[in-house]
Image (cartoon, rainbow, N blue to C red):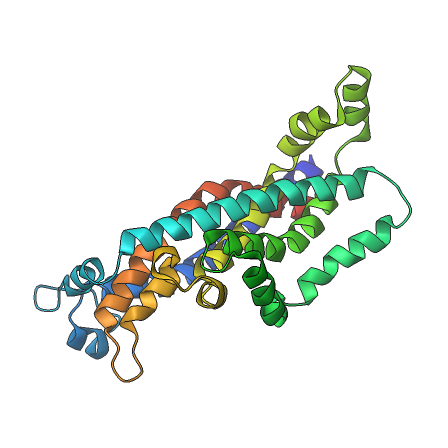
Length: 279
């Protein structure tokens, strides 16, 4: 009984902490959103005030719709983010399962090698990556961005998922083998459903850096037809003059899909955090 109460209390505390951090993180989003509906003077005079009859303005959204192909940028960002996350979760889970399930010579070294990707930023190899993409004919394509983001997210995915997969019951997997299930069916039917919280955690950690990245779209895909939302929004930022109404409006529209994806993954994310706390 005491153990049950203690576990319940730990779970509630973890939920409360996560909600508190979420509210703190959402405050800048709230400020950006309310200022996107203001005139430029109101943005600088009262940045924390809600828009009223005098300060309300839709000029920022009108500018975004008229200049540049916002919906094309939005589509490109969605394609790159969703495809990259799918590949990260698929290949990361398969590699983590192999490292956690099978014992072979070099298993530990392979795990350490993959973990190095967490400590070494991929941007260090920008010049080499650009040369590879040029020689492969992938410059100014969404494929180049997807490949880079997949490589960027795999080390963290393998590191997190392998830890969770080691906790999956061996009896469950052996029972599947006795019933005649192949290793692929054991992986997809038995193991993956049990590590969904960890996969949601990996998805959240990789989703925001991919969606908000400016560096690789600027280097690898600067053409108009493959611009991402973050890169397309830079058209409103000049060296001497910045259209703050348009910038804030573009940011507000860019935040929406990230918030939706976060809500989708949040329940599993909370389960992953609380399960680690309970253990």
